[in-house]
View 1 (cartoon, helix red, strand yellow):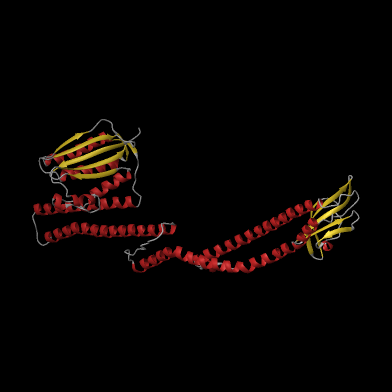
View 2 (view 1 turned 135 degrees about the vertical axis):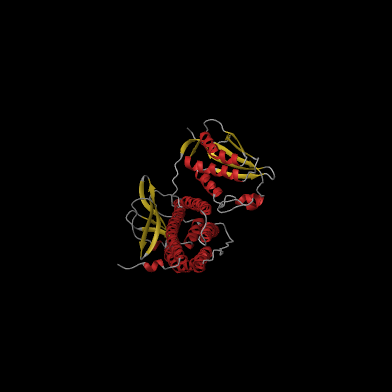
Length: 468
């Protein structure tokens, strides 16, 4: 079997040009054949019309005698016959037995065939075709002869012979011009694709994601492809930078507690200590281990969400009962810091969600509120149904105290981002709000934050309501 792999190595612009030329050649050939056929039929139709007019005219020039089969010899008839001879008509009178009794023009060259019925016919003699019309001459109800009017089809035959040759000789030139134009247009149309290819190769060779196609031109399919390619590179670069930042932040967050653990162990081993000192060191080490566990759990949770492997089951959840339980869990911590929690929870408000994820979400928000609310402050929690076409439930958590500077607000839900300048130095890896944002996204909801200087900070979560 002959291998056709060489076809795959032909450039696309050449393939497009070849197909374009082949299609154009077939189209022109078919169109030429059709026009040739139509032209031939049109010329024959015009010849037939002229023959019919002349036949009708010369039937009026016949002698009126009962048995006579001849033309009247009048000057007007002679002038008419002379003009007809000049334009190539041949006219003759034939008796029923085939004898020619009169005629004009090249009537002697006509085929010697006696007509049997009136109408048009195409006859040939000495390789010359004639188009004829046969009209019977009737006297006293009897056919006494035939009037034949004919015109040579030599001109039509010349056209029939020359037209295919003209097309045959001109078609290669037309196809050559079409190929040149097609190659030019395909090169122009595929230029952005070539640039995309070069850009991709350069990125593969240098790992430089800053390169772009920077297409400027028509917004056609190729232009849209180039624009989409640049947008894809923007997203890839942003994702790569986030991954690098995420890796660096994760390494930093892991290194800090490990360094503390190693340092405390090293210091403790330098000399003998009392039981109380050993117990204090173990407590500190336990806190750092807990921090490592929280950090590793947060990283694992985000990684599973990114890979789409996070177990997520949507159920109808009584949000009011869920929030009451969470408030009870967070209440002791708030009381320790002299923080009041005020809540407004309507009874039996159902949402569509995963109970474990929702617990994680609101524990995170309330825990943050407790962390950043000063002693004597207030945390408010309220829930309400939104009046909109989509059935949504709005949950808001606000706390008094220092506000978040406006420049930090757009970044609060980024991983490892901490606005420490706004809240002071607090323990945490900056994953809580990132996890909260991912949980809300999985539920098909939205989370936003607002912070009024010197007043309060509010986190608002919108979740789909349950139909049940």
